Image (cartoon, rainbow, N blue to C red; front, side, top):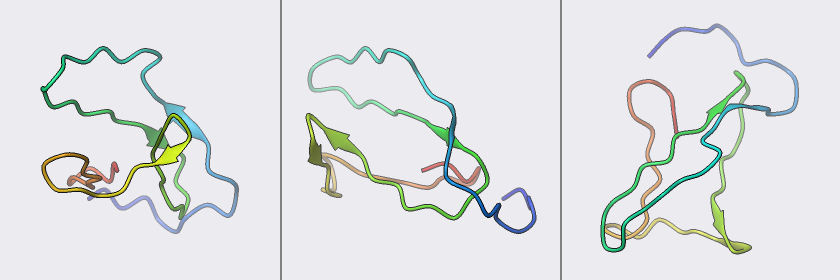
Length: 68
C-alpha cells in the first residue's frame, strides 16, 4: 500500500470513475472508482438497492492499491 499519510478531514469525492460500463451476461466485471484520501464507507447500489457481499455473485474487494 502507498503511504499517503493521515486521511483528509473532508467529504469523500470521486476522482476517477468509468462513465459507461459494458458487461456481458454471465461474465465477471470489475468496476474501479478512485476517491480522494478520506476515511469513508463504500456502498454499491444497483437500481436503488444496496448490493451485499455474495461470494461468486457480488464481491466488494480492496486489492493492494487501496481501491474498493
